[in-house]
Structures are given as structure tokens and as C-alpha cells.
Amino acid sequence: MHPLAPGTKTPAPNCPDCRGGQHPPQECPCHALGRWCHGFHAATTDVPTVLRWWEAEPGFGAGVSCGPARLVVIDVDAHPAPLPERGRLLPGIPVDDRVDLTGLRSGFDTLALLAAYRSRPNPCEDTSTLRVRTPSGGMHIWYRAAKDGPRFRSSSGSSPKVALAWQVDVRAVGGYIVAPATRTSAGVYEALPGARLPAPLPLWLTAELARTGHSVEDAPSKPSGGPVAARQRAPHARGLQGRERAGERVLAPLVDEVRACAARPAGAAFSEKLNRAAFTAGGLAAAGHLDPEECRRLLLEAADHARPHQPRRNCLIVDTGLRAGSNRPIHTEERP
Image (cartoon, rainbow, N blue to C red; front, side, top):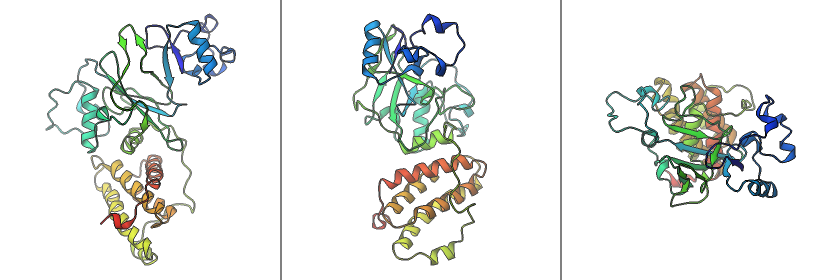
């Protein structure tokens, strides 16, 4: 937590010694003295320090540094703005000219459009997680990233480089979010009915953030055993016995869907298909039907065949899906 200037949503000003300086936050001497310089860089969970700050200025609002807290907050804007060209509504997803955009005015609309395109529930209606109505009429949707999962950068929905959707910002590493109940001159950040704590970041949103370039992970290590060889179905099938054969029958069609995306450079729902295959593979491996390393090799081979220009992103989606799926073992009798 760190202070926001009274009545605003911006960090409290730095002390006079720092305002005119050019030193980076990491070298600021004020932090060692327990001061709140440099905004979210001074955020702390030390209760005595927080109490001392608010005793000094009871009118402070509260900001939360998202990166250290493993938070990913979807910041939905409702500001009036001219509608951009179709290609910027959902970056990386073409919006056909036949789609009627009448009435599309805000981030609420584009986030709903993205969810509908992926056949997933609208996050704005997700009562399982903390949602906060902002004074401007927008919404903050709080999620918790997995401790051993990927880390994501902050972004602006108006950015031409990294964005989730038009008028939808992302608050994560390198950003902060206004805590609920904070009062500004424009109004109060009010928690909406439903959960009061952030829920785990949905798998499909994890994949969307990876797809749109939000990952800040270091380059993943290559799988053991060197480069992935092309898959040979018959020899592989002959080597499987019993439970492994059943697991292969479940996974093979999903892997084939991923490979088939090579025929369509865009608009093939590649990330979602790879996500689903990895999640299923993780569940099958957890139930003892498949070897985890073999699953990873097959998935990466299919992904790199379909999207050879993005090996790092492919690794991220595969590893995230495998981890998530491992928490929900799948027994073959549960699937046709």
C-alpha cells in the first residue's frame, strides 16, 4: 500500500529533496527513512509504517502496487472518446466489416465483445471476484495471478503497441490501482456486490494477456532433450499402453486443432485452442494418463508449427495451461 494525495487518485508528492532530483526510485534515500517518495515504488505491507503515514496525513487515499501483490486488475474505462478503427478495438483480432458497431462506446463494450468472441463469461459480470465501481463510471476488476505463473505488464487500452482492448487498461507490474473506499473529489471507489477478494485470474484472460504481449517473463528455458522433433503418430501410439493410450485419444484431437491453425495466420482462436489443449494435457498427466514432459513436447511442436514466429509466447501459454490443468486431474472416463 502507498499514499495517494488527498482527494485525488495520484500518488502523494515526493518530499522537497526529491522533487527536483533526477535519481531513480531505487536510489532514493527517503525509502530507508520510511518516507513515501516515488509513488508505488514506496509501497509497503509494514503496518507501523502505514499507520505512521496516515497519522501524518489522515486525508490520504490508498493505492496498491499491483506487481508485488501479484495483482492483475482489468481497468474498464467509460470515458467519451471517438471510436478507433476496427483493427484497434480488439488488438490482433479482426472485426469483420459486417459486425454492427452501433452503440459501442466504451471499454464495457469491447471487453464484452472480447469475452463473446472467446465464448467466455463477461468479466464485468464476474461476481466471484472483487469489482469496484469508479467515480467516472468505469470498473476495476481485480484478479490474483498465480505465484508460480507468468507476470504481466501494465498497459493502456489506447496504446497502439500493447493493449488488451480499446478503453480497457491493465494494471499489473509497473502500475498501481486505487483501493476500494478511497474518496476523491470526483467520488468514492465503491466495491460492488459479490466477492470482496480477488479471484484467480481466469485461464482465458491469462492467454489473452500473453497473446497481446503483456508478458514480462524472462525467456523460458528450452525443454530438456534439445529441439523438439516432428511428431510421428504411429510409433508414439505403439509405445503407449493402457491408461496412456486412453489419454492420447483424448488429447490428440485437441493437439490437431492447434496444428490446423497453421492454415489460418489470424482469426483461428489459436491461443484459446492451445490453452485448452495444455489445460487438458495437465489434467491427464496429473491423473497418470500421460507423461508430463511428453505432453509439453507435443504441445510445443504443434504450437511452433502453427505459429513459428512466437516461440516464447507459445511456451508461456503451454506452461500456464499445464500448471492450471495439473490442479484438476482428468480421468478418461470423464470424457468421450
